[in-house]
Amino acid sequence: MRFFVCALIAAGISASVGGDVSFWSAARGAGPHRIFQFDANGVFTGVAIEQVAGAQSSSWGYRDGASDRESHIYFGWDGGVARHNADGSGGAQIIAGAAPAGVGTWRALAYDPTGDEGRGSIWTQSFGSSLAEATLSGNLLRSYPNSGTAAYGLAYDDSDGNLWIQGNGTIVKIDKSSGQIIPGSGWITDPGGGALSGFHDGSGRLASVIQSQSDLLVVYDTKGAIVGGPWDLEGQTGESGNIGVVVIITDPCASQICGDTNCDGLFNGGDVDPFFLALGDPAAWQAAHPNCDILCAADVNHDWVVNGADIDPFFAALGVGGCSAP
Ligand SMILES: [Ca+2]
Ligand SMILES: [Ca+2]
Ligand SMILES: [Ca+2]
Image (cartoon, rainbow, N blue to C red):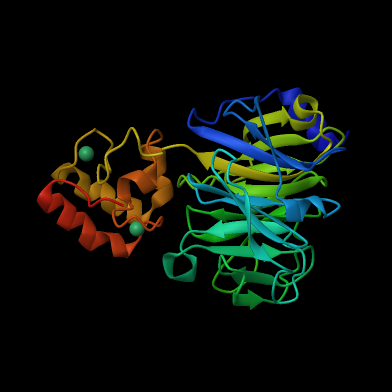
């Protein structure tokens, strides 16, 4: 086992990442390829669901995965992209054929809630290919030449709307407006680091599969510190080929009020200043309100990003005492 993983296990980190979080891994097994569900403590729930028929005929099946926060799970492979409900049910192939712009295999996969004019889009890259954004039907929206990265895993960072790429022992952030690596971003990781998935809770946290001797699941913060895991996927499921990961947040706003940006349980004038802090410095806002989800609090127009487009809806909601429904 590589040093990096040994160091992780020696550190003994195994913090829960929050009770409303669940993870899915995709694995190739001796029988049908399946996906496996894990709770917020990294414990296998016993729920295992077969990958869609089109992925069963692929030797590796599903590769990296993505989620739209709470409703759907996405996985790509060499022949398309599938979508399941958050509980794993209802698996269906939504894209047939190779990824556009010369990417080929839908290998590293991220879901962008702001893409395709708010309808949601999929970013993908396969090893050293170009980086492409496609509609949920698989049509090319834009692509960038390879940034010098080898992608096994891709994740959307909801704290700033950019993308993380993992491959060849590094994780780096890509500026979505240029396709280039953001200087100074990222960290060295295990050479076996593969799949990545963003949390979509405003924290920018990343779930990652480390495909070492026993496949592990870890959670990083945006500086590369391990804040969850390592959890042994292989030991719990008996499947050795864990190559995809997805994070799902169940009912993330259940305990919060839209517009309540100081997280005191009320929506009133006391929320104006913290609302602007959330817009201008989301990291500072999150540090000041560690138990609140920034999207639940400040994404007043429900497009999964906190920005200037939320200002008018915020004051409109303040005037009537509540946000409009999503
Ligand atoms: Ca991913
Ligand atoms: Ca408040
Ligand atoms: Ca918004």
